[in-house]
Amino acid sequence: MKRIQLKLAAALALTSLSLSAHADCAYPKAPASIPNGATATEAEMVGAMNAFKAYDAEVKAFGSCLDDETKAKAAGSAQLMQLKTMQSKKLNAAVEELQSKAKEFNEQVRVFKARG
Image 1 (cartoon, rainbow, N blue to C red):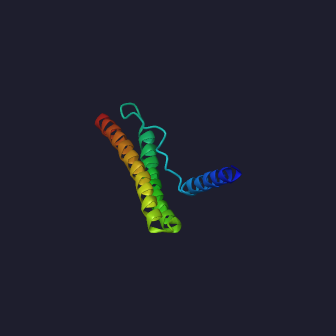
Image 2 (tube, rainbow, N blue to C red):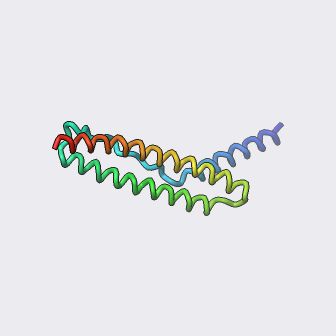
Image 3 (cartoon, rainbow, N blue to C red):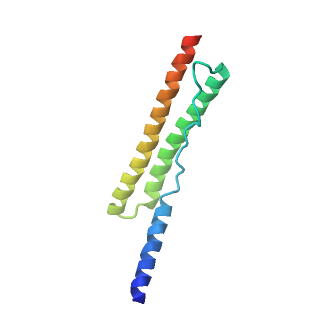
């Protein structure tokens, strides 16, 4: 009975270590808000544009970090495939969010320019 508990505890410890090992790359955060193009000032739109440029750079850095993490942590071919799959899903999610937010921002830029 004790042996089973020890094996279970060891398995749980290894699982938690492997999960924390995959959390090294910080997921990029999208800009908190997108100015309303109908009411925003030019300074607000420029600030948002700069925030989106920084966000785009963070997403690219996130992709590079995931690549480096994959290279550093993959020990065997089975583990490598699992890690690549997981890293690919993380990057795809970040890129999809970036594209969605950029689309929203670009719509507001068009509204802002139409005012002009």
